[in-house]
Structures are given as structure tokens and as C-alpha cells.
Length: 180
Picture 1 (tube, rainbow, N blue to C red):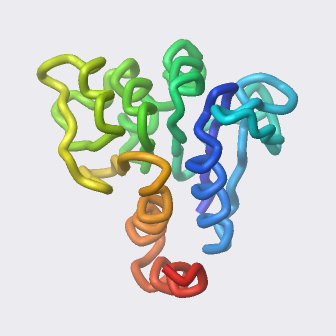
Picture 2 (picture 1 turned 30 degrees about the vertical axis):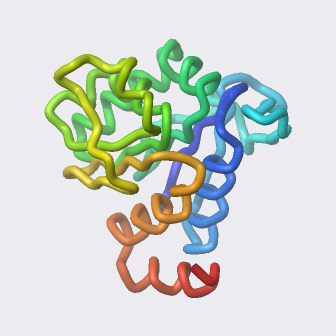
Picture 3 (picture 1 turned 135 degrees about the vertical axis):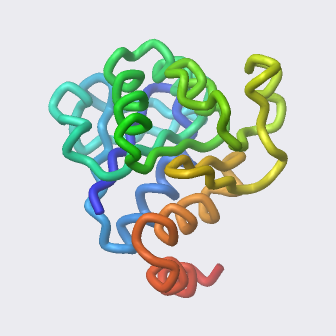
């Protein structure tokens, strides 16, 4: 599987790194794309070095698109035309996509949450329309959309992505190796 994980200044580092690391343990081809060239300063001032910049990739080349949360990164995803278009395209094509935490706001901005069951960080629902509200669950799968609540649920999110997109057996193998 080929996964695309965009990151931006203010992205939640635990969520980003846990997604990336866990999927790579499943031997997925994971590309981390910064919304701008260079090092990204994550939400807790951890510097992350993307594999490439968004402008150097073609989102159509990927099977899965996953957004980490963090309010700064989410705000960047909400106004980035490329991320917004990729979310719409993945949804329309029935390709797997998802997010953790506040990044649900970026999915809502793209118009891909309406009518879907999803979850997000508690409190984010106040910034969503009344007719687009989350379930209070750790990880939610609705069709080809996978969402999760926050940093502490990132492993469960990544393992669910592996289970749904590859196989439950592969997810169980990765889980065992992580001692979860």
C-alpha cells in the first residue's frame, strides 16, 4: 500500500510519527509530504523532516491519505488547495482516507464529513456544523473513511488502517511487535 501523510507547522507530532512508523512496520510505502519545503515545526516544537514537499508529489499515486491533527496543521490543511482537492478526490474515488484529532475540521472544510459517522478530539465538535457531529469512540470506520480522537488513540488508528486497507492478520502482527 502507498500512503500519503501530509504535515505542516503545528501538526501533532505524536499522531504523525505514530501513523508513519506503524504503517512502515507493516511494510507500507509511506510518503511524508510537507506543505512547504523544509523542516516542519510540530505542535510541541518538535522538528520533523518530511520526505518531500507537497508540490513534488501527485496525490493520485497513493492508495491512502491520512492527516494527523494539531490545530496549526489542521488550519494549514483547511486552506491548502492541494490537500482540500485530494480529500475530495479520495472520497469521490472511494479511496481510503482519514484523520485524527482536530484534522476532522479539514475534512469538513473539504465537504467529505457530511452524512458520515466519524470521531475527533473532544471539543472539536464545537467548531463543526450542528448536522456534522462526531461519535464518542476511539476509532470509527465509515465506508472508506477512518477517523480517531487524538494522540493517545494514534496506535489504534494506525492499526485499524492496516486492518481495513491490508489485512487484520497484518495488523495483528504489527500490534504484537509493538507490544500493544
